Image (cartoon, rainbow, N blue to C red; front, side, top):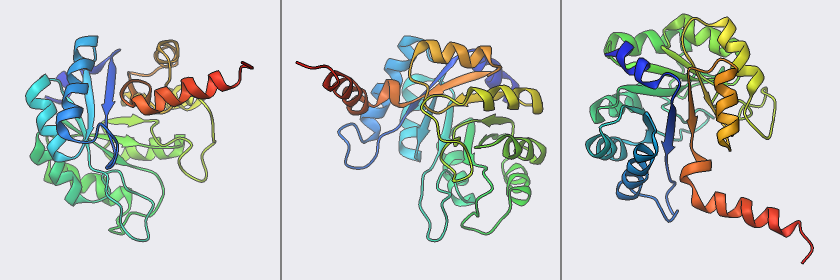
Length: 231
């Protein structure tokens, strides 16, 4: 199954369909409709948060899903699928792949990446693992310890990675040279041109969220740009 899912993703667009509590589109019903619209537009997969959303999106779209569970724990900055509890929820919901924070930051369960990734592989041998990283070194380590995919998701979100406006093209290019597993470009991809450039830099696939599925942020970008013009 793993190779067939990765083959379906190759060269394609994966749309991240997520909304936070209190936002107008929060809830499985809205995110499922968003995912269906993404499928109609040509998306090859969906990234979704939480078991309810994952199940509904898979049932409605039939697309492969990269599942995450965002959960905050005390004394840890890691909140994207931070422990085995969240991994189990993703598997139970039926996602083909689980994405998790694979940065150097301390995990809430105290496990190192070298311990955690093999543990997941033993417990869920058919589950593909996507390592969300912020640096080349983190990507190399994640691939070494068992990640099937390395993604640039967390570039700019750790205190030690460079802050930037757009996609981290340098990280995409460097990871594509340094790791033998597919590299997914994710983070601050705001236009079709940037998505295409990610592929040119070596990305296997591109994940886009805000620029497609968060209308309040899209609207805000238009409004802020228009305010720069003197009436």
